[in-house]
Length: 376
Image 1 (cartoon, rainbow, N blue to C red):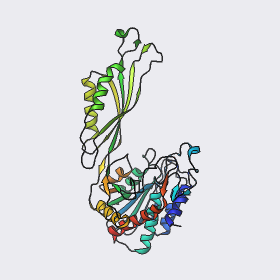
Image 2: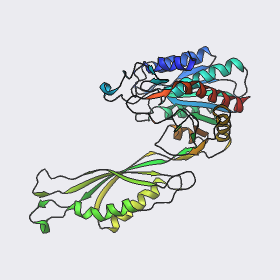
Image 3: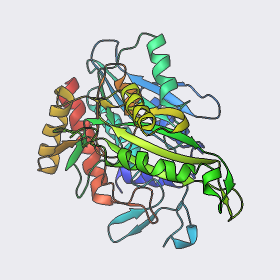
Image 4: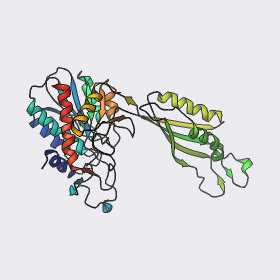
């Protein structure tokens, strides 16, 4: 049995629904310690984190980053096999976290074990940042580890995040950045009244139509080679007076921007509020900048990943910034080059999540080869 497959099955058996680690990090940290790494646990507020490293203080520091937590399994009765019992079928391994991202953690760990055995006195340093809060609030996880490293004046140079980034086959895509995410909670005020006497009321729903249409049709930018155009999406609208013959006094609208680094949250907020004011709305809006964008570009780490993918998978990878957010944003904020490279992503967060078992060994080889290119 593949070392990586065996470790992945061990991790899947632990129901680490965010932010519960369920013992995954104990397994990973003990293996890394056995390989010769030093480990510091940085748990806080019920979130498990650790920083592990091997090698002297010489540059560069190459970091593997990932999360041991998973999303809930959902309707367990719809799974063809229990989500926390790894099941092999037709060349695939099924279980929650098989793709996102216990496979990445397993491959990183085994690759590092092999690399240390082969190069025990390698230059530079190999590091691990692991959290149990990536799928949750992401407040006391990777951010806490990065804060610790900054306090200790430990620089990070290259970081590989093991998120499931491949589309159709392993290595066909890597992420060299991510869009930012900005949430707005808008309340448009009107005046409550009898629905038969609208002239005595002020309907906030009717008032909002034009402004909301302007926002949804707005071209915020045209994107570029790496980033898709900024997206404004309304995901919730609510207005109710509690009776069918009354005009409500307020309308609540919740929306989200996904934006590239060409914008700042402040610019988007200002433009949005200007449109609301142009349409004469009385409103309050609360903003939540939940994720800053980052862009590492196609610098040394990206080139190394592209070379390793060509060598191991015999394909040319494509760089992109698609998808949601990841903890890579916290690491990129230190100035570190960040690349996300992991297994095929189409079953992540879904019923019957799975991974091609053959990809596990290739992913391990990819991570090993990247270490060789950067440290040998």
